[in-house]
Length: 234
Image: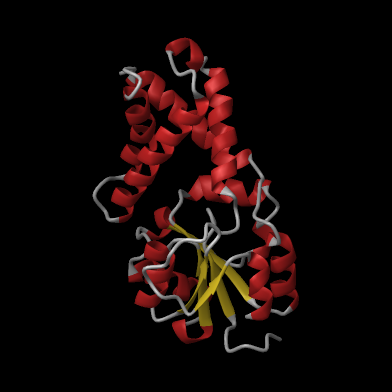
């Protein structure tokens, strides 16, 4: 059995264990070729990716605060990116959005030590779960294709719970599903506002996975710079 006070470990998925940045860039490159975007005036792929990431981040922030619905997030990030190139094509935007969400989950890049860590936690008999603000079908497909799904007992998505991190309700939903409570649980994630503040809102200890060496504006219980640092905590 585990030697810490924690029995239940809740992970975030994107940017924490599943390398969203690399997988998303590969997917956008596939779309750039498939839709012949260079012929439409989008010749600088790196700049295109940069602008997409900007709009994606801004819209996810609005979605997580409840200002926009899922469907608007899905296609408007592509629409707004194309508009920067004076391409006002709603049909193209929507088709690219559909294809992005179809191709993205087939990508398999994980952060270093992910499987080694999950094997270790499983061996220590922790109950391992996932709380993600992603879409239900997309997140499950990512887990299956990257060989991670079998590690997780409960997989909680914002779509499935009707709440988003950092709302306390998504954590309460997760506790009910996992049959546990905050005191014996710990939240591990890369996003200070969603994962760490969310865990604090729910009364949990937290681990900030600082892959990008950010200057944290919210204090987690622990801060780590690589997943391998978790071996010293758990």
